[in-house]
Length: 76
Image (cartoon, rainbow, N blue to C red; front, side, top):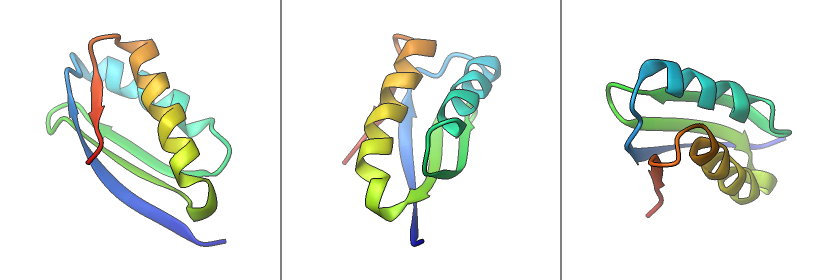
């Protein structure tokens, strides 16, 4: 199983507690092998199965917004 690790800039992560809640939610997604959301750096590191990565990323963005509606993941 090949995995991909990418780093995404974030905007609007209000606190470390929110970042931890986002991580917990994303970690439950099938195919996620690693996730870290840094409140201080406003950055998400996501590692997941290559074949499912785009789908997982979309779900991760929705989960982040569910925790904090003002938060956004910047996808370039």
